[in-house]
Image (tube, rainbow, N blue to C red):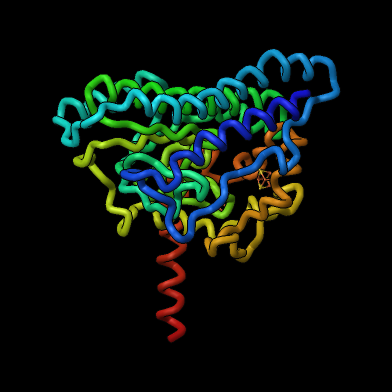
Length: 329
Ligand code: SF4
Ligand code: SF4
């Protein structure tokens, strides 16, 4: 019954999103755009057998998933409320108000970037290419319990919250006569981790998620594309967090600990050409049967303490390696 209903819902959502593809004035997906994640084909939702967990699933998890799905309908349907001639330049006060608004809605980090069209899902299109990226913290203690029902409840709650905030921010901007198109944290219309990387919030790790300086991989993302042209865009070519990826290349803990061995040491090529270490065909079935998994977040050293500790250790090692090389040459 749940699978049948989800399939129907996802079908309707796709029809709605496909209407934007090719639409005049919309930013179309680039030549390397990817398909959106089909969670039903990957096994859909798993209903726990144990009675307490079953109750939690039906009374907590399922309603939150439903809210996230309806949030996806809202992000496209609410485009009808976009101003006909949206404003394009924001005052410093409005830019500050956006940050205040997001922080009041539990957002931990905000970044800005111009959208690379290759990150738009290939079946749809988006209205603007100026992106506000939102990241909300996931509770550290509950990540450490992964995989568990307790972790899944927290993850679904964060998805629902940050995705809901994206829709609320879109409404806030429209009320100020700016155009806005939200992307929810679950599904959405763009691939969020590389967009967040471009926005300078962190760097995408070998586990495929954004690793941030303050919170490591313990964040969920959402975004709002807007008509505001003068956002304080990050310099994507000089991302200060690039060292994270170099650290990642030395670490590999998530690769060793991933239960179904869905993470590879060497990157593989996805359909469309993009490189990744994550084999979705192995990850998703395990993910759905095991409370949304989360092991690769739990074991990532950056989930636990401040990134700066690792940055210092990494820089020390680099200095030592450079000295050794110099001595040997
Ligand atoms: S979510 Fe779980 S199965 Fe998927 S890559 Fe991470 S550890 Fe592996
Ligand atoms: S566990 Fe290590 S390799 Fe995996 S994402 Fe974290 S830092 Fe990178």
